[in-house]
Length: 264
Length: 210
Image (cartoon, rainbow over all chains, first blue to last red; front, side, top):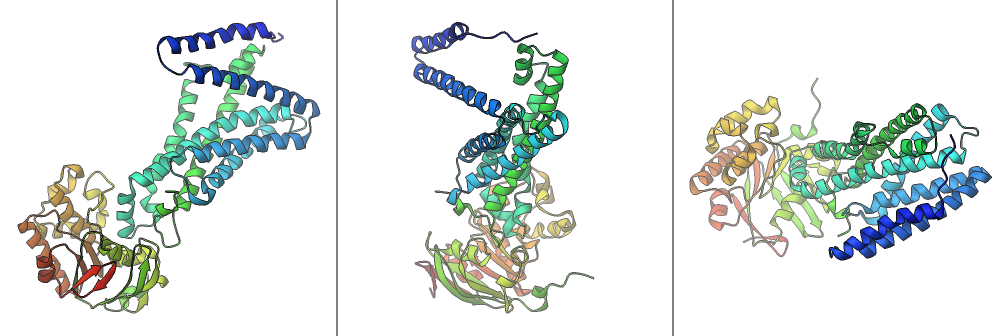
């Protein structure tokens, strides 16, 4: 079965729904019509640009171009992780945490999938590596930013309790243990939801895409299962890594809680 | 063989040497074994800053010694088990008071409760259901259960009625007589004169004679 190609008219028909949404915003005084139209226009331009770039990279098959695209994606995801919490560490430490956890967890899981399960030739084939990286990064971004936001927020809210434990001789690791666990758990919730809902409540995006592209449903399911396993591993690594690095950033050599390291 | 603890080899005596941070100091002070030093001063004068610096909870310069042993040579958690700081509003991090004590320490805790007018069932009820005064006395139990050499108390009777205040003072006096050294921050000059062998005042973030 070959995929059904979409033309400009097909997309224009679907765009009517966006116009209806903007119209409803005007009629109901929701005052979001400008944002809806701007976001839709931005999405179309971004995706068309990405499509054009990917077409060029796929055709070239160059490892340098593939690595360049992957690094750009990791950089953008790391930035999102860094800016999500209300609290920012001085000296751009949020960005360092974001870059380390996003880079390490996504590269490790995508490399694992490319070298073991999918095994394209060459192994870095951009047609596989880039989409896989995109999906994994989405999950990693979610888990790391939820974990980081939860941990930093918990430190500020629970400062008195943490310092009371320190004052009685606890280490920072002991004093923050409960908060650390809760923050990592928070980062894992979207992954658990995603796996629990897959197939019953939702048809995951990648599987839907492959079904629409004409793939046999069982083959599409196998890909989806592989992806969900990858996303879970990457997300767990990212959430745990973000929280542990965050804890290290607010602990000094005398086991003090250093909230003064946040930008006021 | 038990761990060797250099802090336990000599009697306690606290010595502050030019302790200074962005929020107060320099503070210089010596506290003898079994001495209670009362600290008075207006709100915001730096009394709590002084106690937090001694407990090593805030970054600063200067040195503190316990029996001649420099704090900088001692891991921070070990130091804070010997020199225990109790904040003016003690915080709790578990659902019940009992959950704040290691199970091996519960007999000692149970022995402390009557002296402060507390009953053992209070250990197992939701900490939020204790009155402010009960929580403050329970915090003192928590601090004493660590068996510190020096106790840094920030307004430990601020939320207590007269009877409970006297119970706390009597218990602390007995501990001081047994060798415990205390820095006792209070707003009341009468209480300072009652509990302290010496009274000092923090003015403009420095220690002075009152």
